[in-house]
Image 1 (tube, helix red, strand yellow):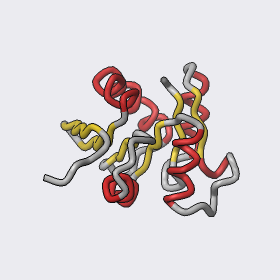
Image 2 (spheres, helix red, strand yellow):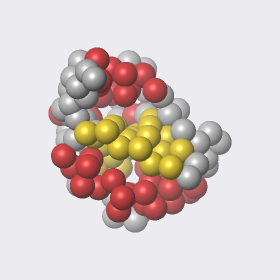
Image 3 (cartoon, one colour):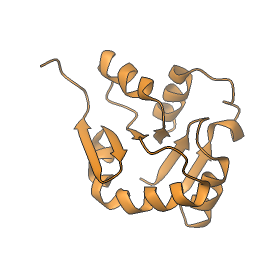
Image 4 (cartoon, helix red, strand yellow):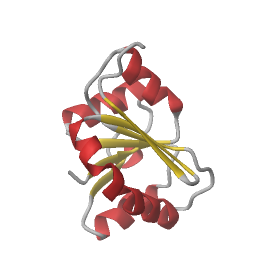
Length: 124
């Protein structure tokens, strides 16, 4: 599954770059979700079986609190990435997270680290 929806805070060009590389990628602003809430973007991603990519920690919090099993969400904790840099990052981490996101996971990507938590998130 290489189907993504990119949240508003990410460069629009990333979706086009990934699409040119064979991904099915869409930016929220290009699919009528430019004013959508986080929850609306998550519901779109779940309905369309897409992985949500965001800078926003609220996406992970919403999924955890509601004990959702979809959509998988990748939170990027690296600020200032341009479209090509973000596309390259996604392609670099994908082999390490693909199995988890296909099953349902929250992924956090920071400089030098990838953290994966399977869905649903259970209280400890």
